[in-house]
Image (cartoon, rainbow, N blue to C red):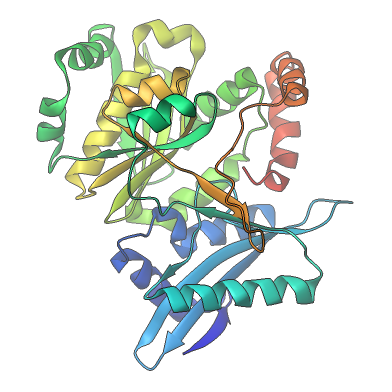
Length: 351
């Protein structure tokens, strides 16, 4: 077994990489080469494709990116802009070899920080553990039914009533696997990020995601009276579907556009054959956590740590006081300003 590094130009090899990801039960949509292609094309961060190979082919992969902010030290992140980028391998020995390889690579490049984000925990927190972790970040995941019809039938009557409320209020939804809804999606997303006090991704980031993921991506936009008021994107892997971005315009939340958005995208994932729906991270026992829990999602550990450090970082905190101050100021910026400034710095923020 040897470890090699692929490049963005190795299209035939990256096709084999993606095939390996598709067949690995612990894989996610973020592991596909499409994610790092977008990272490189949009934000010009260095994509790293380390893979282990034996005489039969690929037996392990480690995707990562070099984050190089101006005037600050470089770091390596596996993976940036999402919750997970853990090693996929055929054995623990191969995993250890890949970890050692990236540590040696970082040392040779003079990089001291390797941010490793694992989504490998397969057992949810117990009720007792959940009570003890209030205020900390967790991953929310839900088992999916075999079809959208069965998925809808699995919901409690109160949840189905909330979903129906959105359509009774005049909300409609469109889905696309191309960039036809991109402008409407971005109008909702960029405004919501400003209102949350967070820098927004560039519009071309989402264009790259749609173009690179092709049949593995679906964009949904909710409308009311012809205006886009809710939007989201899901990325599909045979085992798990992830929703990295979902937004609504706050003044329309009384119409429940988020209920129609999630119900439709979850149903799409079920019909696509995914067995798990990954809602992403939330602060335990707070608003987004309760929203996701009502669908049937359970809390899982986010094992994020720096490679080379013995202690796993299970204590992922919420927002710091300094960040809360920045968010308050950000919310007051005109939308064109927050979009322009935010998208210029977003690539250097790995979360």
